[in-house]
Image 1 (tube, rainbow, N blue to C red):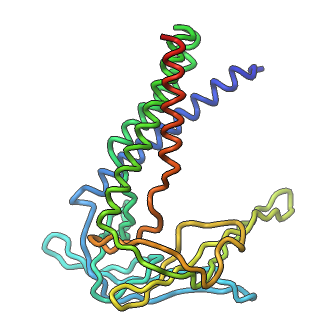
Image 2 (spheres, one colour; image 1 turned 180 degrees about the horizontal axis):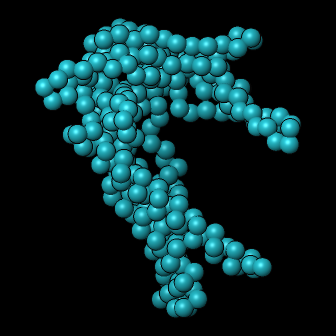
Image 3 (cartoon, rainbow, N blue to C red; image 1 turned 135 degrees about the horizontal axis):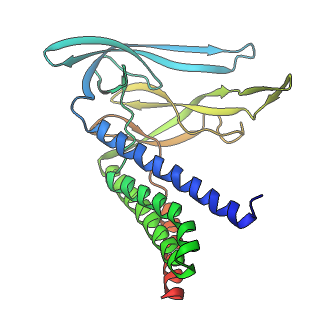
Length: 271
């Protein structure tokens, strides 16, 4: 049977593998979003709203059927895609290939350097148990400090990149128009065990004289956090027209600073 220390080291290695996979995913997404073969530009032809409510008149499904015409090579094609943001005829949208499907590009802005650093962090986490057993506490501590420095650097790069993109964004005032209820049910031993309800706000805003709506990607398990009619501040990317829901969180800088302090303290203690 594994001791608690061995179990902790095993968990660290599993976590390291997850971090490496996360970094690889970010890097793959970056190359996908910057590939001329994958990214296409289209124009909205029309947009229809689809929603469904339960017997208590609660919103349980919300999306838009967007018909887009786009150019691929010398051919003009049309496609219908599902999206959670309302569009107007003539809107320019970026499309991306996802396997055999084409969908509207939701820019996640993965940073390649941050992705590579994440992979290096994962490798350092996996290496820690081996270094502890074969090279000793001192080398393992240096490895742990390097991992924390890299993690802080990754957080800082991501924060600065997101902050830089806010320079081309305009602030918009919106309000919560409705709440989407997402219910999860799990059948265990012939009993229905319900997870807490999840609520996603539908945000209404005006842009270029048009009233638009979108389904937020942020959610809560408490119905009291988001209220219909509540004012929300969002941002619009002036270059792509896409919505940015939140500014970069300065708490990330605090986390990066704590990691740096811990790393430097660790290095000083063993060097």
